[in-house]
Length: 260
Image (cartoon, rainbow, N blue to C red; front, side):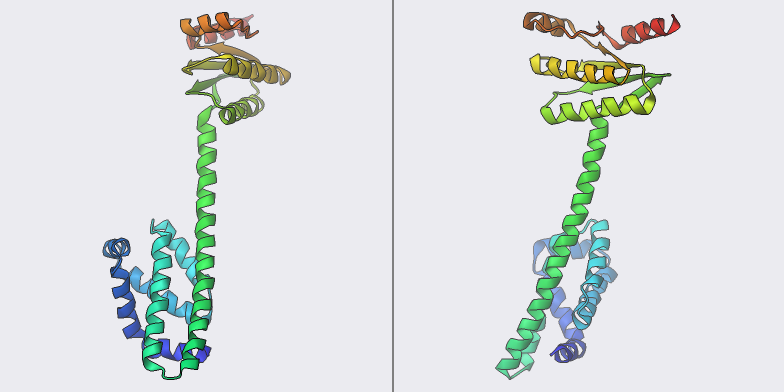
């Protein structure tokens, strides 16, 4: 049966190509992609489909998909192209073959090939997007609370935005990792950009500073605005660390301590 399919694909390759391309342009999204891409790439995709079905090799399409993803094409485009190729190939076979039994057999073989290829492509696309997501997540993690060395054994940890449970853990990890990496003796935790400092945030700050103390580092909280100071007093919260209204005063304090 493989030989039969190979013969049909080889004999009617030109007709199949024109049918396939017409089917691709019938969809608005794929038409836009075809219009904006090099025609050589479209031909390469078609030839890759031919090679895949005649050699029963999914790897060639897998490699092509990786290149497609790099060019910002859509996985939808690839899956639609396989569906269109399968449909047009079967149309040719049905029009040329009289034996119903052979048509059914060929239909099953072509469907098995397309189903297998589709599963592989979806897996490749999913893996690629997961990898990209993890990279972006790591980048966001690093930007969430970057440890910035400003002097020898002195770092600043700027915090910006609301602090959620997940973000609090990320900030704590960055703080402790940064202390070890930069051999910090002092860390200035700047909360100027934190809009709300309530009981939850203050408890988190106390936990983080206690953990830092276990690593031999002293945390100093800077950026205490008047409304934050008033809120903490009303809540009866004692941060148990040195605090300053701005980063400059905190750095000044650290430098004075270092000189002694």
